[in-house]
Length: 126
Length: 126
DNA sequence: ATACTTGTGATAACATATATATAACAGAGG
DNA sequence: CCTCTGTTATATATATGTTATCACAAGTAT
Image 1: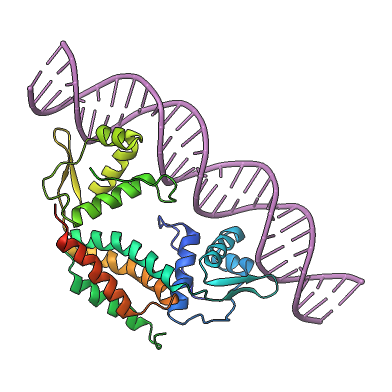
Image 2: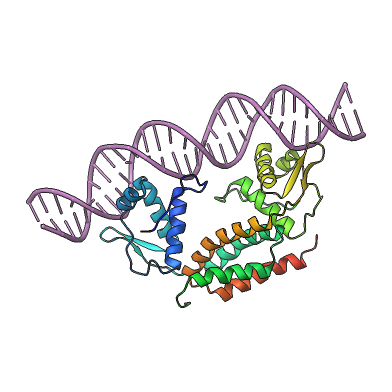
């Protein structure tokens, strides 16, 4: 389990946890059907409270990345709502790109960054 | 002043304010040297507290989008640190694209959205 | 059957963040 | 003098994040 929490970050711990797991799924470190550590295990391992992990898992479930099973624990299970995903991405990008635009970042430079990051997803595209 | 606040949003009011002003700058609705409404004016207009507007302005100042002058009020003044801007963008995009990747969004689709948004910058009139 | 582990829930406590409400101050300009 | 600016200072209320216990129902392991 390669999870690193920055306790000095202004980002909430459960958000950092959520983000790293999402990145883990995108980079195929976790795959459909894989089980994540139990809330207590992961909490002990990181050194945080059980409920903080539980909150991260709850968010991931609500966003359609995992399923929570009393028997197996947290299981990677992608609920793909592509249309909604596209809408969310466009909404988020609108702010992010505006910020970059004010810093004189061009569309070409953004395209380049996109490709760099997608290269990290070394497996086949869906 | 075309500012719309969603009071039911989970995003803080001062963040919504910050985002809309950044988008306003990116789309040339506000230009270098333009003055924003005073904290009291804008607060009255939107129907929120003065300090909430002041916080938005303080964040915008700290991030290098405006300057605050006791005489003139808030003035658009871009402090362009492109290298840092690129780093921030890549950090933010890493999470955002991972989320999209899990929803089966391809690199090509992201490129398309980028171009769509950048088109809004070109055709928007001040 | 016993012991253990799973997610889940309730509750309490504390720190921080958000937002509001007043009030006052110093500098600039009418 | 009066009014407008950002700024600072309190105080208050609410929400959020995090930790800490305690407990429960359901599944697994021995």
